[in-house]
Amino acid sequence: MASYDYEGIPVGYYDRVLQSGNPVRRLWHLAKFERVLDYLPESGDSLLDVGCFAGTFLSLVPQARFARQVGVDVLRSQVDYASARYGSPFREFRYIESIESLDRLQGPFDCITLIEVLEHLDPAQVRQMLSQVSRLLGPGGRLVITTPNYASTWPLLEILLNRWSDVTYDEQHITKFTYFDVERKLAELYPPFVNEFAVELKTTSHSITPFLAAISFRVARFLSRLVPHRLWRFPFGNLVLLVASRRDTVARSLPARAAGTR
Image 1 (cartoon, rainbow, N blue to C red):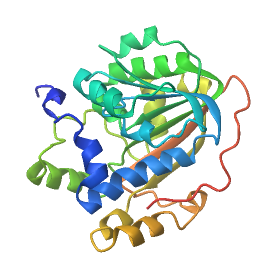
Image 2 (cartoon, helix red, strand yellow):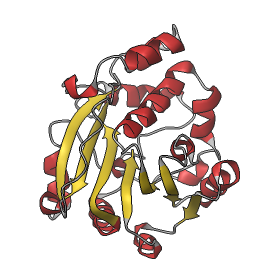
Image 3 (cartoon, rainbow, N blue to C red):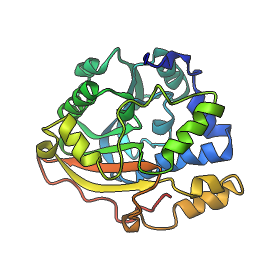
């Protein structure tokens, strides 16, 4: 199968979805970003978002939370959009030609996010990516990963999106994970993972509430954050969320007040 042409995705596409798109898709993306934010420290020096696309996630992170914010992506047009719309003295966006180009970044970073990135990479690229993350993440730093859960209704949603959405996913998603195999697969693809990272949390999100936004966005968002996420052990949500810390030192504990997304 030919590789997907990511340059064909309209510039700023997902940013516009979050701002003014269909309420279900709006809540899908907002709830995902809010969930990632829940598992980042309340304050830190530096945050790296790999695969930042149009910069939407970092736009939700205030300077008081992270004094230095960097987003990187291989799509120059999306990075240009992010820089023009969300760039600031404390937040920068950089175009990189490949995973290897991450060598140019100056670390370490306190936190690194991979928000629906790994599924777009082949096994060799996943290995390269995790190696770079390990190099760039400082001692005790936190890594937050989200990826579609193929042990959920996601495969059906993917079929529906491929048929009716203006952006399809059949050629985008290469390496597929489930709630049940994500840790094992990461260790198989990048064997040092088990020695370099300690998994603090593995859970899922996005099962029912995003779809309730079709009735009421406000109520659906409220429900999505009603139950503390540490109490949520449903393995069939549409997204897997994994939080890990660099083993070099004892990582800071997860925020006790983090709430849950369904």
